[in-house]
Amino acid sequence: MLFHLTLAAAVLASPGNALQQAHHPGGHEKLGTVTFSTSCTEAAQPAFLRGMALLHSFEFGAAIESFNAAAAADPSCGIAHWGVALSRWGNPFAAGLKPPPVLQAGRAAIEKGKAAGAKTDRERAFIDAAGQLFADFEKKDQRTRVLAYRDAMQQVAASNPKDPEASAFYALALASSQDPADMTYSSLLAAGKILEQLAPSQPDHPGFVHYIIHSYDAPPLASRALDAARRYAKIAPDAPHALHMPSHTFTRLGYWQDSIESNTASAEAARRVKVPGEELHAMDYQTYAYLQLARDASTKKVVDAVGDVRARLTAPGAVAGAAPPLGAAFASAAIPARYALERGAWAEAARLEPSPSTFPQADAITWFAKAIGAARMEPKDLAGARTATTNLEQLQATLAGAKENYWAEVVRIQHLGASAWLAFADGRKDEALSLMRDAADREDQIEKNAVTPGPIAPAREQLGEMLLATKQPADALTAFETTLKKEPNRYRALAGAAEAARATNNKTAMRKYAQALMAIAAKADGPARPELSAAKEALK
Image: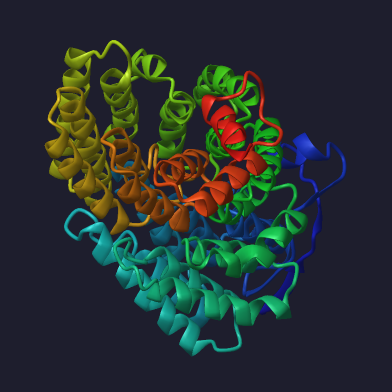
C-alpha cells in the first residue's frame, strides 16, 4: 500500500525526544509541512515524516532518531534508512572531506535500506542515488561522488516529474555541488529556479525556502533570497537552523540587526535542545554582525561565552545539528579573532592563545590573527609575526597534503596576507603590497563557505589599509569600494573608504562613506571607536 501523508506544522511530541521536550514538554513542535509518499506501513509514517521535516532543516541528530523509529515500526521501510544515510552525510554545503567513520555509517545505512527491500521504483531510486555519496569512498574522491549523486538525483527528478521532493533534493544536490571557483554561479542559479517554482505549491515546506537561501548565498544573488529568509524562521521555528539560516542572506546584504536577531534566537534554541555546534555557529554570525555595528560590549559577552559552549560539545545528551564538527572548531577560533581584528586591537590579536583541534583550517584562524596583530601592534613583534606566519605555511601544507583543496587555498590566502604584513612591518613596502594584492586576487576567485559569515579579514580591505599607510589614498579608495561591493556595510571598509576619500579631497565620497559609517554605528557601544570620531569630525 502506498501512503501519501503530510507532516503538518504541529506534530505531537514523542516521549524521549529532546527537541520536542525542550520546546513543548507535553505539546507540539513546529517544523513546517512536508508531504512524502512512501510504501511504509501506517505505523511508520509519523516518525518518517517528522524525520523528513527535520532533515529538510538539517537537524540531523534528531532526524536520525525519527528515521530509526520509523524503521523500527516497519522493518520493511527501506526509505527510512535512506533518510538516515543523508543525515549521516550531514550538511552538504560544508566544505571539506567527510571522515571515514561518517562514510562508513552512511554506507551501512544504504545497505540496510537495500536489504529492507523498498517496495517502489521511486523509493529504490532515492536509495540508489544517495548510495553514490558513499560508494567506493576508499577509491573514489569526494568530488566525483558528489557529482555522481547530483546526476543520479537529476534522473530521479526526471523520472518523477510530479514529485516535489525529488525535485527539491535534486536542487539541493545541484546547489551544494557548485564549484566555489565558478563565479557565474550556474549551478546555484539553476537550483534556485527549480526551488522558486516549487515554493508556491507548498508555502509551509521548510526545505524549499531553506534551499533557496543556500542557492542564492552569493553576493550578486543574495537579494533573490530575501523573501525566503523572511519566511523560513516562521515556517519552522522549532528548528535552530531555521532560525539561523536567514542570517546568511542578511549577512550578504549587510542587514546587521536582522542577522543579530536571527542568530540570537538560533543560539537560544540550540542551547535549549542541546545542539552546541549549531549554537557556536550562530554565535560566530552574531559576532560578525555585532562588530559591524560597533556593538563591542555586546560582542564581548558572546566572546566570553565561547568556552562554556565548547565544553558542552562533549557533554551527555549533546545532539548533532546543521553545523558539522568543523563548524564548532571554526567558530571557536573565529569569534575571538574577529573581536580583536575588527576593532584594530592588534596587541590583543597577538596575544590570542592557539587551541589546537583536528581541523587545520580552524587552527589557522588564530595564527592568522596573531600574525596580523604582531606585525601591526606598537611596538611591533616581528619574531611573533614570523612564528605565526610559519605556522600558517605549515597548516596550508598539511591541508594540501590531505587534498583539502578548498581550505588549503583559504589558508594560503591567509598566509599571503600574514606575509604581507610581516614584510610591511619589516620595511619591505613594495613586497608587502605585492603579496597582499596576490591574496586579494585569490580571494576574489573563490566563494566563502557557509561555515563562515565572511573572511576573518577580507584581503582587499587589508590592501586598502596598507595603501592608505603608504600614502596611496586613490588606490586605497578603489580597494575599499571593491570590498563593499562584495561585503556591503562592512565597518572597516566604510571607515577606510571615508578616510581614503578625505585624503584625496573627494568630499562627496567622503561624506557618503562617513554618513554610512555613522548610520550603521548609530547604536555603537562606548567608548567610541576612533574611526567614528574621525567620521564625525569630517562631517563637520
